[in-house]
Length: 157
Image (cartoon, rainbow, N blue to C red):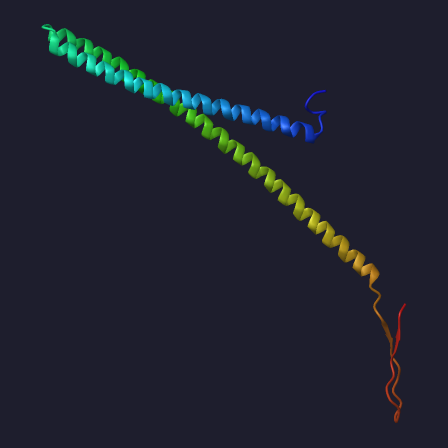
């Protein structure tokens, strides 16, 4: 049995669990990326300490400075690349959420429109039933003769 043949009560929990799984994966990936950034920060601090000690101990300070420049350049490029990738992930996540919100808004709009149509149909049906059910009295005009009271008769028909 494919998804189109499943009743909505069966497919709704599956869609919800699939959505929950995707949401958890996205959260996990984002959390991992943040941990990587924190780890990168620790690496940069330890590298700075190492190069500071190396600079103080070595006689060839120019080699240490050049090595430090290369390392810092690569670390900076790596950090910017990582931040760019995280920005891409956040943008994708926001795009998905905006798309999801738009789809939900469209569904609500359709439901509101259907509700208005049903209300209009019910109102129209009720008015037509009322017009059939109400019987208005018919008045027969009688002439008033001098010296008598006017009389009118109601005939329901």
